[in-house]
Each structure stands twice: as C-alpha cells, then as structure tokens.
Image (cartoon, rainbow, N blue to C red; front, side, top):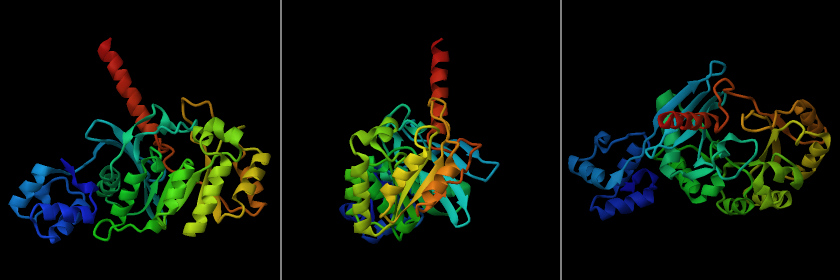
Length: 349
C-alpha cells in the first residue's frame, strides 16, 4: 500500500496522473490529509469511485492515544502515541506566550547512547516515516484543540540519523496547502553528527539548529555522549562555524547541567572559548533525573550561567515544563515498556 501522506505535492501529482485523474485532485487530497482525516470516505469532494480506488491502493497513517498526561502546573500535555505496528512514541505540547510549541519524535528509540537520556534506553527500533512525524503535529492539534505555531524536533530519536525522512517532513509541514508552518518556527536538535550538519547546511533552510553539546572537552563528552568518539568537539564546532557561514542562522548550544561532571568553572571557561565567534547562545538545561542513570542534576546552574555571562556569552536557563508528568523525552515510553515487560513476566509465571 502507498503511504500517501508521506507524498509531497509533486509525488501526489504523478500518482494521480498515473491513475488517469486530473492534476487538481492532488491538491484536494493533500489538503484533506493535512487536516488529519483518517479515511478517504471523509474526502467529500471526491467521487465515490475515486475514493474506492484510493482506498484500494493507498493507506492513511494515523496515531492512537496510548496515554495522555496533562500537567496541573502549566498545562503541558504529554502524549504517548501507539503506532500501527504496536510501537510507541512521545510528543509534548508546550504553551508559551508566543504560541504553542510541539516537541516531536523522529525515531522509535535512539541509538546514540547519551548517558543522561531516557530515549536511548533499549536502543533504536526503527525510523519514523514522514507521515508519522507529521501525524504528531496533526493529531496533537486535533486532540488538544490548540493551534500549533512552533515545532521542535527534540523528542525521541536523532533527527540527522533519519536525514531524508526529516527533510521530507520539513517540506510537508512547510507546504502552503498543508499546515504551512514556517521554517523560522522550527528547531532541529542534533547530538552532533558533524557530517550531517554539513549536509543540512547545504539545504539552506531557515530553521534553528540546536546542538546538544553538554561538555566542552573530548574526555568529558566522550564519557556521556558516544557520538563524540566519531566526531570530536573540534570537528563539531568546525561544522557549526561552517553552518553559520552558509545559512546565517544563529545556533543554539544545549548544555545539560550534570553534577560534578560538566559544571565546573574551568568547563565554563572552555565552553565560552568554544562558542565565542559563533552567532550562538547557550541554553543551560537543569538535568532531568533518569532512574537508570547515576547522573544527578547540577547544583551550580546559576554560578555556571554567571561565569559565561561575565565572558560575554548569551545564556539562558531552560524553563522546566511538565515536571509533574514525566515531560522529558523518553520517560513515558520507558515506563510503558517496563509495564509491558512486567505483564509478560506475569503471563509466563
């Protein structure tokens, strides 16, 4: 079956031409799909014969709510979605004064192995399709009744490890006949695949690149982020410099504050030296505790921030949203997996 929601307008036009249908049908169907319909029967301006033809050859992706948690503190909504193959992914809706932001996943699990992240526990299962990424935006908007104006690719998975799919998703979500969310309202987060950052720069997209740095030296970074063994801090920073030269877009460096690991004054000084000369800002992240990890949240966030600011670095501290609903990526899926494993054990007992 054809995954028709992963098609862009050009692909869809070819499909309808091959079906012997007029070209304008492509735009009609594209618009319906990007409204979140789950059946061709809902496409009321298509003939019954065409709807039946499409249903026989194409499938429409959809997500089912496995679990939904709403924060009593700030209204943040966390979704655990079930995919048709039984796997689960997470999406978070966050409300800000400037609009609603949805944080979406790009893979089922993750193979990057960062020591402080719950998403990577259990490794990577598979990549998501463009449609499955788009569905997180569509169905979050439909379920919540809230208009989404901003997207961050910062959920489960490494976006640049699923590069072609992510590029197609960005094209789809930016389409004028779809959700039409502008690139400047989209942030893409990477753990530091330097070669893919180089490739992303050549796309000349006006999105915001967020680089998960988390340590300013190879020794520390390699301990908590295995990706650093393939792409050193020096190689990564060089890719960031080149990215800015090509795109002119400011880069955000994400830095999870870990007690006794990456929060010393000396490391603040190293970090300041790394990002100086790049149009960038540093986003300090109070660490979310993961049960399986021995790493603890830093107690020196404010001191670290001041040390950077005193050296002319633009610094923010990420506001924690949804702290009462396991809103950091991977935590809800991890709990669901543990419950499934426990249920299987009880069944075998």
